[in-house]
Length: 468
Image 1 (tube, rainbow, N blue to C red):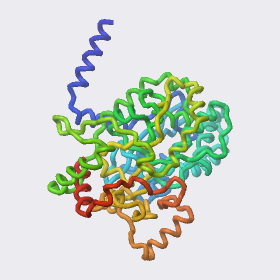
Image 2 (cartoon, helix red, strand yellow; image 1 turned 135 degrees about the horizontal axis):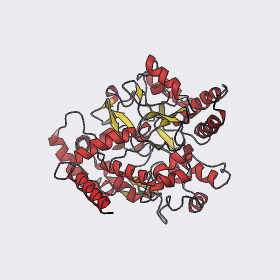
Image 3 (cartoon, rainbow, N blue to C red; image 1 turned 90 degrees about the vertical axis):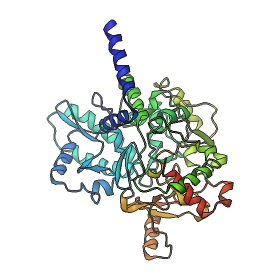
Image 4 (cartoon, helix red, strand yellow; image 1 turned 30 degrees about the vertical axis):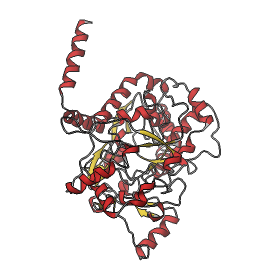
């Protein structure tokens, strides 16, 4: 007991002795490798299918920003490897495992940022293609048939849910929270209603999560983030067991602590400080009411604060995500075998979390559903916002708009390129954002002070946001 106490105290002093910058660097490295594969379960593909990926790595085919893995599935690539894909041994087989950063890393202005939401991930397309690939893969004879069959069956079940056209995402960069919801219905033995919804949202960033979780996990804040279960909700949907989650609950707590240590990426280009100062004054007279104020510690690093949940009647952005929380869903959470780890906030008015804006320059496209390509567009009246825009290579430097702060897009609605884009969007092209799709509305987030804003006000405000 004495030695354990000495170890604990020495560890604590060592942790507190590190600067936030050091902790952030260590958190980045650890999150890059973080996954919840345990006892053969987790976010896995069919056994030994990862060997095909190993072969692809040797040839380099498809492992570029123009390749299949990036353009069709939206997987981030670095050094010609999939970010967040791991190979794990299990019972004489190789298991392909997806880690957290497959979704929770993204590119902005050409740089890969750990903890930024993936702008192009397409779980629906991944599920459709993986289902077919695994179906063919499972036909071949296996020397270890019993072990293979069990794991293969779980992988097939997960991809069958991902590819379900009634509940999956319609556009790259969005993930359907319906996936999490289906786990509760399945676990509770309840048939999924016909009007189930998708609840599509863009993948959230992770820095500042330690404070955000107090307001609630997810974009609407309904899930109580003080409890650890929601952090592995997708793992459960992927085939993780309830018993396993209980056994590695300490690992979940540790992962959430890592998120708290992350720092936002610094704006990589020049900032007009005089404009930024004027923008800060404007921000502190208007936007702070929802998004708060921004202070730094003695190291000059962000001081994270708890965000507010803004009722929908004020923000009025796309309502589809709020339809996700239904009375029967809440009842299933209450009766779930993990109801001590997965709780919700009772009596909370429906609305969206007004995210803190640290690193906001990198988090485009904006709003919870990613429907607005730039901050400049967000500061204009909804009727003047772009109806359609291309997500192709959205995180690369050539697609970054410094002036408008966000995604550089085709704006000439009379051009041949724009008309072609619109035709493809209407046909359901997944790499094109079309605001007329369900859950994709770019309306809302328009306040009374917008009408008094000048173009100078907008430019000043944008310059200030670059400093966060």
